[in-house]
Image (tube, rainbow, N blue to C red; front, side):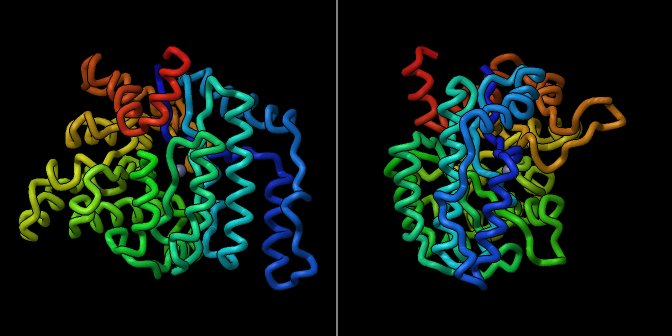
Length: 341
Ligand SMILES: [Zn+2]
């Protein structure tokens, strides 16, 4: 089985974006604010948006199942207040849930949270509870920078984040650490803000003792871990200077990396530097990089090709494709087992 742990609903019907634009307009003009019930998207529209896009590519590439979350760049937690985020997150999570109900063999939902810059993270808990208990979400996306590129929130090691961590522990779900749109002109959203955030989250964990407080807390750092695998020696050296344990003991029981690295040398480096037990297959499609690589003739985000060509044996490849995902996402494992898979 091939599980893609990182897919976003980037092909949602246009009505979603139109509703969001009206919501944003309504922030300054409350009489314009749409009700959630004014967004109407039929099951047929959802089916069409998936079958001819995400599911078509999954079938062509031989991927069985995607952990599916709302479009990351659209989370935009910096827009409006917590109530705006709350309504928006509820709408987006409900759509991913409906997709998972329409295509139960192929999609399992992961939730975005109704975060808002510097607002108490306990405000995210009701949506998180609903998504796990009613929608069967197996993970969350946690935005370490709800300000959208200005980094106004405390580091991930601070108690500010603990209400979310406590709930993650209770439900035994991991968080993908995933920022959203950059509203800082210095940072391109997918080209720098995403990768900066991946690297930043890792370093925040490295300098702290977060996983001493939460030994079973699990973070998936997407986009191949940003700059982390490439600079593994720097991080090992910094940990040593800070008198931290070896990284394998300090962080690698809790931090995992996906394979959203869009060329063979990057995957070769990832699989050589990072233990295979910490690597989870993902493509983040249909997402950040949608074109065809002229050097190979294949889509950049057709990441299965790189894993097939990587220097890993069959057992290691199975871990990357399925085994690690089932271990890091126990609710996914339980769901698959309940279907005899
Ligand atoms: Zn993503």
